[in-house]
Amino acid sequence: MTPRSIIERALAENRSKLLEHEALALVEHYRVPVPGYRLVHSSREAAEAAQEIGFPVVLKIVSPDIVHKSDVGGVVVGLETPEEVEKAYDEILENVKKHKPDANIVGVLVQGMAPPGGVEVVVGGLRDPVFGPAVMFGLGGIFIEVFRDVSFRVSPFTRRDAVEMIREVRAYRILRGIRGQPPRDIEALVDIIMAVQRLMEENPEVKELDLNPVLSYPKGAIAVDARVILE
Ligand code: ADP
Ligand code: MG
Image (cartoon, rainbow, N blue to C red; front, side):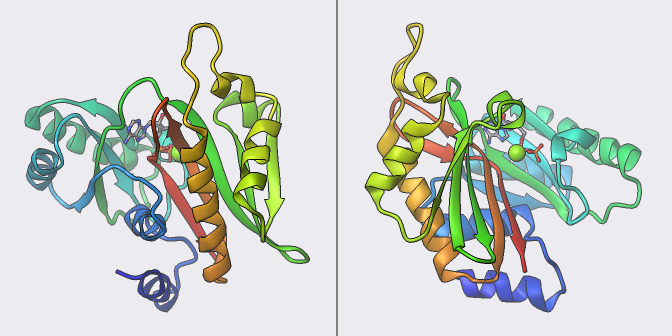
């Protein structure tokens, strides 16, 4: 599916938020690395998909009515066998029924598990009414939520600007390598920041985009969660 067809279908269905598999397909089109994934509708299909993608996998609820999936027990990580996958599928649906009984459920996303040891960062796209598209960068978890330790650049900006943007956050030391931790692949993060800039430039209907988290490694980076809000 092309970016246009993904966005147009959502708008035609009066949805202001892309479903997670649509958001992943959209960012994938801009060459943001994402794990393999498939949307499924039964526990058996989930186990099949996991076998196809390769273990371990993660299961996630897909619903237009749920923004923070973990808050409703809608994410189970680290599933190693078909049996675990089938069990997690039923568990997720039960959790969601309990926490959000009237949520409309589109299915469950089976997603490959990113390797351990990644540092969680966040790359966001936003659209300022005056300045137009902008991109945000920060480290995940407390760094953004508690310290508001983030940096922004307004489009158009260069790869050099993107490198500066990464170095500018106070938590950059963690990416540079701290306490025996290896330094992270900054170029891979720059690639993702530039991809988000281009996506925001080329798709004016995208109001907000959130890759939260992107896992950053000594070699490479991979986005495991994508949220896209349309105008
Ligand atoms: P939400 O933000 O809606 O609660 P996420 O998709 O971000 O759901 O998943 C919650 C957390 O689970 C992530 O922040 C990450 O730590 C972990 N996680 C999710 N998907 C993966 C994955 N494919 N590989 C490794 N860890 C993952
Ligand atoms: Mg998330």
